[in-house]
Amino acid sequence: MSFLILKNRLVKKILINIIEFSAKNEKRIKNVEYVRGLYRYPKKMLGRKLPTKNLNDKTDVLVFAAHPDDDVLGLGTTLYRHSLKNDSTRVVFVTNGSGRDGESWNIRFRESKRKTITRYQEALNALSLINIPDTNIYCLGYPDGGTQRYVKNMAADILKLIQELNPRRIYVHCIEGGHIDHDLTSFVVKSVCYSIGYSNIFEWTEYNPEQPLGAHKVKFLPTYINKSKTVTIEISEKERELKRQMLACHESQDVEQFYLQGEAIRKAKTSQVEKEVFEYCQIPETKLKTIINEIREVLVEIPSKVKAV
Ligand SMILES: [Zn+2]
Image (cartoon, rainbow, N blue to C red):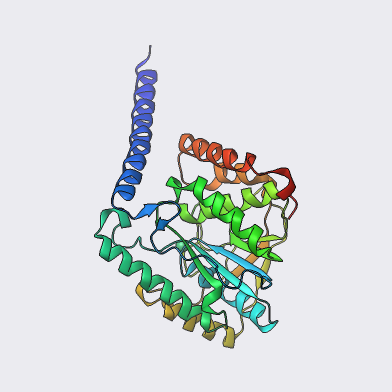
């Protein structure tokens, strides 16, 4: 056996050990989150706010954003234009945004809670500038930077929301390897949509390995999977100023500086979502396989009668 083969095997073994260690680590973190009472699905999720009062009101637009501020960075002007048409828009934040300067499981409960409240309030302030009322803004309460530990629960929540709110159109992140929470939000929402035959779903690009946050001319990554036409939003000076004001509301994130960020959307291709996630998501392949199987388990349980939304 040559030295090179031995060396390759050794590298492979070390890589597998690292992946296995991180998988065990995720389980350990999830246990810590449970024991500390931060995340106990479904009753105790930090920052969770679900629709209660106006469930029967129409929903023209339903947005699934991973963090409070992604909605503005990726879609601020697009949502403003919906508001001009009097479209009723609801925004769902999948995580509570408690991740900056240490993940929620690793910092004091009080500190995590404080961050969560701040992020939600900042989102309310920003969206009020385009007339989206507080009653239309929700948070599923998953840990910022920790969606990979809760994909099954996320799928159940997202399915329920789509069925309850019956939206005319959905917006979600595209899968582009910029942030794991963005990619998994996209993956879960598109998987759910595919399984229930919901097709009026659009995705936005935000940042990825080839496109920094704040890019003026945003572009989707080159792809052989989704051939849908990209619609680039031409943002006027007045709309740009509004976007800047909305971003300024997210004071804790210091994102006002990214107000030049452009906007581009395209129709999502829900049938190819597993291919997309393998192609672009930064999670190691073995871990992704586990996540995909978890989602499949949830979606296979959907009774056929609810499949046609
Ligand atoms: Zn984000």
